[in-house]
Image 1 (cartoon, rainbow, N blue to C red):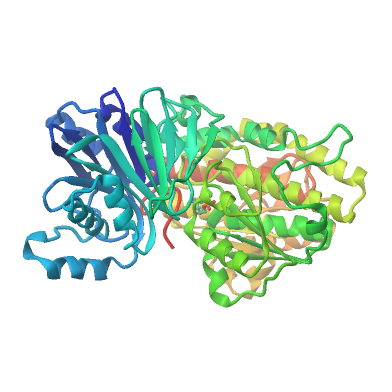
Image 2: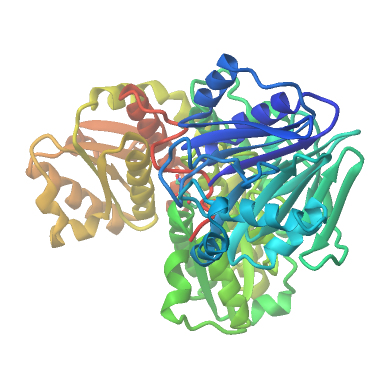
Length: 616
Ligand code: M6R
């Protein structure tokens, strides 16, 4: 949801900013823009559409050299994605240039106030951002520096925002502010960076500084000064980024998504590393909740959005089975608006790959006001959701750039299983050897995923054969049901097709009316160990087949009872039913990626979407 870059140092700011925007483009691609400080003036360029449009505009009309600059790649909220609404926005005297991520909720009131003050301060865009640019410039007129101006403006703003600004009269600094919206600082040698995430500057430094809520940060060549909105000094948390530039590159794949699908064996293995003590007990380093606090928990509510929500649905099966603690799974955007029943004995588990999803962030804030403990499952060190939680389990997927979540999902599942087993260990609801057995089954999963990836070509062929199909259904039961939902979401967001996931047993209550002759129905068949479940799934497959569906069945190897009812059979490795999502979802990811690619869509940057959704 908008990518932001800032730079002060000895290099050409234009190069640093454009490189950073390239790595942040997954956050939004409705428009892109850059502003540089050159000879007491702001020089800028901005263009609707992808970053390539801006790069072309700059190639046609080169910008002068400069060593201080800011940049932005936009996911539109206020105002259409056109050149005028693109960031940066300038103040009325063109002294300030500003980029913004988030929503300034009281912008209409501020705008009315500015417009009432003078005709000369006319605003040209439909954005909330331009209002903040005008306010900054008005503040600078009273002979204060940009840092103080930023502080004064921030105290007038409501909503969630990251603002990054430059002042034409002061090329030595870039000033930023954040409230409930991401921003990290990169600490170089004689140069300093700002980015919505570390990908913006990972090429130049792996030393980063995490910022807190309601802070203003000023970067110069020599370092950083942080204060709150009232000028009180603050400190950031310094950390080392443990992945490098190659993790943010495609490494020979056509899409980041495909690369990330193929990274899943490694990502799952990394997420399991170091979780067992020498005595064979499970350990979760960042847990920060005492055993007693965990034993006191009598209800768990999982909150998440999109793919992370489906990981939460799988977690419910695992946690309830291994711990007998009741689990509710709820969409973050619904949670706080229904007056949920949570208290000190409720554990709220927030699942978020980015750690910045605004709906989930607001939900955990609400949960904490109700005195419940919050545990985050997150992939992004330095992000807001883990920082505002009581405990965290970090997944170790590495940066996920493709807008469609893949390795993020699998590593979330791993973290959920670990949490379930850890709770079982602490509460004593499972014997130690049972827990060890499941952990060993989890440790075997990377090799199983490798074997699924080895047969990617047959899934690709199937996907290509379905170009032109208007609609695809996905069905599953038990832990296969969220897999069906996730498969359908992948196809919707990438191929823009009608795709729906159902619990197989629910088909006969209505959705089966959708089935037409030749309609592809992807069926996630549970392993045979659970005979009743398996039998019922076979009945569901026969019901859709009898109505003309083309059945594409994902079933474990050696499952000869499925073959007669499968028009296409995709075999899965043998794993326990609760762990099956870890292998069953992989062909569905490959399928969506290939079908969308064959349809000519931009797999990494699907229309209307952005990687992290930092507005409610
Ligand atoms: O960063 P988060 O895990 O909080 O993001 C949640 C959803 O926005 C995300 O999973 C989204 O649904 C993906 N585009 C799915 O592929």
